[in-house]
Amino acid sequence: MLKYSIIIPTLNEEKLLPELLKQLTDPELTSKFNLEIIISDGGSTDNTLKIALNYADIIIAHTDDKLQSIAAGRNEGAKHATGDILFFLNGDVRIDEPLKFFNFVKNNFENSSYLAMTVFVSIFPEESNNLDLVFHYCYNHYFRWLNNFGVGMGRGECQIVRKEIFDEVKGYNDDFAAGEDFELFRRIRKKGDILYTGKIRVFESPRRFRQRGYFAVTWSWTKNGISVLLKKRSISKIWEQVR
Image (cartoon, rainbow, N blue to C red; front, top):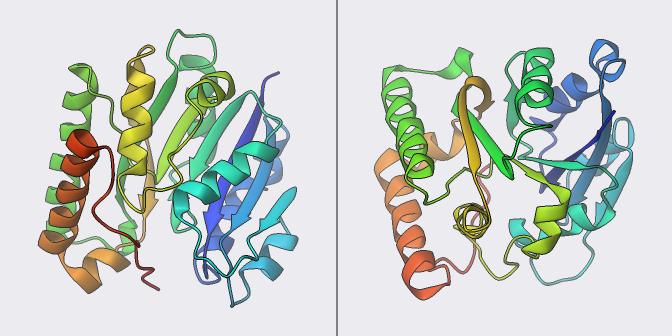
């Protein structure tokens, strides 16, 4: 049985993190899959670390005064991972039907030639509105198109990568405050194929869209994506937390 390392970068996620951790530690799930939960915390000042102590196998706490990028947080988690497949999940997501989710990975990714995979991302069902549904439907199919045409794309809410290829490409770029997810998958795609599937999904919090609006968030993603593609750096120097 292959081991799965679940790497969750956190920063003041006391409100939403417990739901994801409860999903990942459900006895029905852990009896079937060999899961390792790694919390890589960027310097939380709330109860995130106290919560993590009740669920995580490994906790890494960033104590430097310098703000840690989410890319660096993911990389720190990966350094401590002992699994064969790395699952990078943000602290504000929930998995839709966890058993189905991990079964799909086992049956469609483990023994395939794919180097990485990503899934459909949508808003928490209880908070979703029509604009959320339309935007995420279009955006997810845009990701599908990019992967089909060899660009490589996947949002950081859920990126699944074989440990050996993650190490080979040297992980995320620590210096990127934004666009680090796209940039990683772009490098991986040059090595081989990436699986995008809409058959399983994760739900994300709508908090950033509610506070900033879809236009502002999309424009920020677009600017950073173009900068990563053309200049190999992100425009944003910091990705502000929204809590």
